[in-house]
Structure formats: C-alpha cells, structure tokens
Image (tube, rainbow, N blue to C red; front, side, top):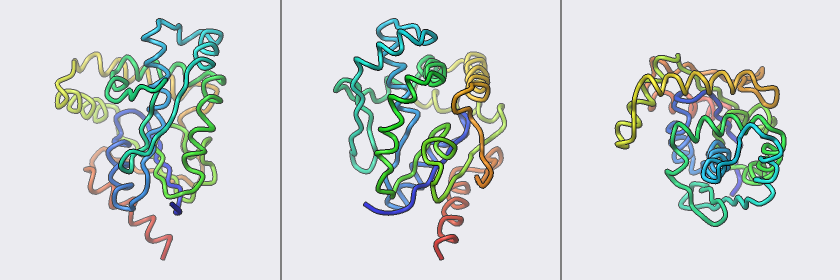
Amino acid sequence: MTGKVITIDGPAGAGKSTVSKAVAARLKYLYLDTGALYRALAYKALKNRVNVNDPEELSKLCAKTHVTLKNLQGKITVFVDGEDVGDKIRTEAVGLAASTLSAFPVVREKLLHLQREAGARGGIVAEGRDMGSIVFPDAEFKFFLDANLEERIRRRHEELVQKNAPAKQEAIARDMQARDDQDSRRKIAPLTALPGTIIIDSTHLNIPQVVEMILERVSGEND
C-alpha cells in the first residue's frame, strides 16, 4: 500500500476515533489507533497489579510483554501476548492508566517503533495524542481535533450508554479532566498542536462535517 500519512491528534472525547475510521474508510487507507497500544499495556499492568507510576515495574512489564499489530479488514488491531484485547481496553480506568504510563520513556520507546513501522509505507490515518508532533513529524497532513470539555464529557457518556457500560457523568468528568491534565503537562510528548497543524474545533460540528473538512483539505492539497 502506498499513500499519504495523515495524523489526527486531540484530547479524549473529541471524536478522533470515529472521524479517523471514517476518513480511512473513505480514502481506503489503514486506520491506526495508537492510543490502543498504550491502553493495551495499561490493561496488562492493571491485570497484573503493576504500579503504573513506577518506572522500574513498567520497565519489567515492557520487557516481558509482546505487543503485535495485525491488519484485520483495514484496521490495525492490537494483540498483547497473543490476545486480541478488543473492548477490554476501552474502560475509563484503563484510559487513565494509559495516560499515566505513556509519560515514561521506557514505555514510549517500547511502542514507538511499532507505530512508525505501521506507517512506513504510507496510506494510513494515525490517531492519537502525539502522532503529528512525535511519531510522524513529517506526515503530509496533520490535524488536531478538539472540542470543549462539556461536549467531550457528553459524547463519552453517550458512547458508554450505547455500549451498556457504566456511565456516571460525574466519574467521566473527573477522569477526563485528570487525563487532560496528565496529557498536557507531561514532560515527554505532551498533547500539543505544533505549527502547521490544522486545528478543528468540533464542539458544534457533527462527525460527517468534520470528515468532509479533513477530506476537502487532503484532496485540495493533492489537486
């Protein structure tokens, strides 16, 4: 597969996953959910009661954890020690733990080569927190998808309700604010939009509108 590298970064609840999947489908590109890599390690850490704030424990975890990526019907799926972690990594607790451990160099080094290898041939939409700033700094198209906190909490609550998952709005708000703080303040690869990144505020936009904005920019640059 050949093509461009498109990165879509942004905070939790901004709609990155849904938008990225739609853009990838329209372009017939691969979709890479890089946050799933960190969630996968966080899932194993919580499962094995590893302290996600302890660099030595995280180093041991990384050394004995086998993370692989497989292309399944146009989506790159994450496997941990041969297990397809799927929806097991989509809880708020795992998301918060992933935000914590992603601040440690040993974790980022463990996963960086996997991400870059996945995008080496282009034709990929990479979604995450530092795709345009760290992982793919030379990507042809960099987008930063944002929305105000209240709207992001509402979206996350709605998503969990649809999945019949625990969905207390107060808990979602608390966890999302904690993740925002961790992601923006960490010293290594903080959540940020570098110069040249196209920022889209999706607070008052629906998914199709955001997707069309991105596709128009990509197709316009290719004309």
